[in-house]
Amino acid sequence: MVRVRAAALALRNGSILLARHVKDGRTSFLLPGGGVDAGEFAHSALARELREEAQVTATIGSLRYVIEARTPDGSRHIVQLVFDATFDGDVGPSTDPRVAACEWHLVHALRTLPFYPAVGSHIADDLENRRAEARYILAPWIDV
Image (cartoon, rainbow, N blue to C red; front, side):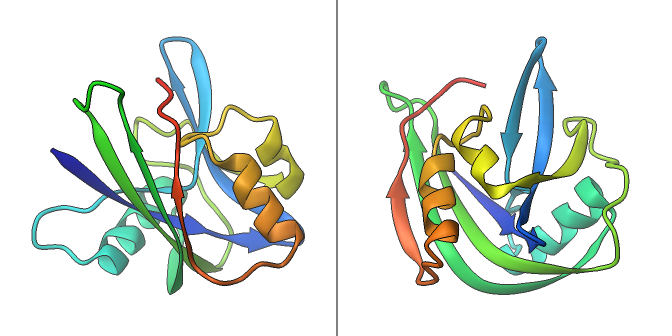
């Protein structure tokens, strides 16, 4: 079964907003967002998730990425739709128990942080080179 996730590409002063997750003592970073529920549009799902994870009201913009990853045995499959997002106000504490915090990180940190799906270098390259067109990335599966 395919899981569809909507995520935000939010930038501010050379930094990108990331959701820090801690699971089984391991820390990983994701673009803030979450699953699209049945009957829900991706933009609506993302706005809802940003309220939950970062306590922000967001303006959801253009599609920037479609990122797809699947386990080698095909048992798990995720398609992530990444949209530009801007916020009205500052990021607040998360009410989502899976998210330790949403934090601003310098874009180049995407190259070294444990980022999921494993496309941090691709996004950093695009942002540093001001590549603005939407694109598809097939990501390797990593367990988080």
